[in-house]
Amino acid sequence: MTVEDTKTHELRRDLINFASYNYLGLSYRPEVKEAIKEAAEIYGGGASGSPILSGNTALHTRLAEEVASFKQKEAALVFPTGYSANIGTISGLMRSGDLVVADQFAHASIVDGMVLSKATSRFFRHNRVDDLDRKLRGFEGKKLVVIEGVYSMDGDLPPLADIVEVCREHGARLMIDEAHSAFVFGENGRGVVEHFGFEDEVDIHLGTFSKSLGGQGGYIAGSSRLVNYLRGFSRSRFFSCALSPVVVAGLLKALELARNEPELRRRLWRNVEFMQNRLRNAGVPVGDSTSQVIPIMVRDDARIFQIGEEIFREGVFINPVKYPAVGKHKSRFRMSISAAHTEEELDKGAEIIIQVLERYGICQ
Ligand SMILES: Cc1ncc(COP(=O)(O)O)c(C=O)c1O
Image 1: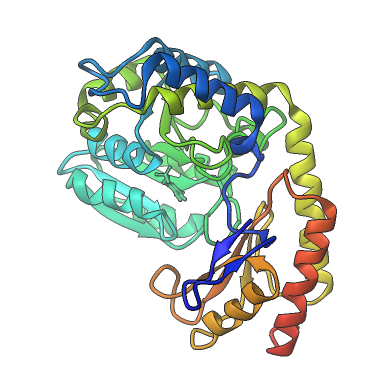
Image 2: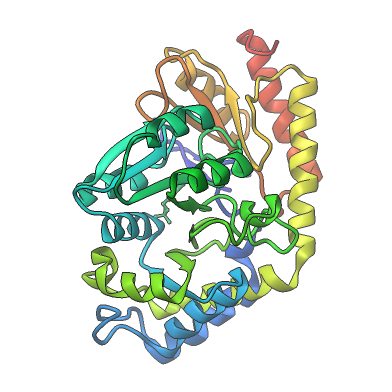
């Protein structure tokens, strides 16, 4: 990729991109671009209306049906963004007097949904089922637990079997945000729920179209009762313009490719294994990541941007992340691997990062 250096205004060309959510490389596929062009010719630029008034086209209806069929659920509902899907779902379902418990590393859109719902909000320690159990104990009303499929700053997965069991014991509904895991995890790409074999035990399946499908938008999938209820009660969808039909056309094609080309997922996982091994063998601290999201734990809040600058100048585009996006002294580079990376790019990119980190004494 080419990036403008905002300090010098120079264009830096041919950078290796480790900062993109385009995990399957679908955003740039010629078939996707062609579908987008055709839709623009028919529909123009935007939906020009809320989904409940004039904004719903045949393409939108088809996308919701295709998502439900892909996820093997009764129904699905499409939102303008993943952020909007989280706030609309959580605040639509939960009320004052209810309880929502989320993992402490939950995305801001989950937290904002909790705040908007006016339900009692609690957070359990990251992936600690004993703490989740404690946070649910002694509460008699309606309870919702919210977790993620892949945690976006750490790349680790939830202990789903144990979480399902604790939710059952407490009569709590379980919602999973698969923003970073839908379409990539599981034999058929149905996410971490398929990977762990708990597709029917999770009540609400949420995801985004902005990552693995390389487009924009969000969805929830589940029972028809849930989806019909949220059709009327998710204000972030009800009172917001529907996704552009142009985007929807691209998503339909990207979903078709993700479904029909399992080799994309195989290539992604080969790339992830290559990079995880390359970094670990060089002593780069990558935390507990077992996914395509790999945190490079620098932990030096004062120097992370300086280190990032050197990596950038040597030919790699990767995002430094620092407090308050992560905790103090937990600064890191957030690396994303894609099926679209070649082995040569992965190798060269890893070499640059390792050399710079070694200069700063970060490798162990
Ligand atoms: C876990 C999680 N949920 C939701 C979102 C929001 O998705 P979108 O960017 O599609 O609004 C993100 C975005 O990074 C995310 O990481």
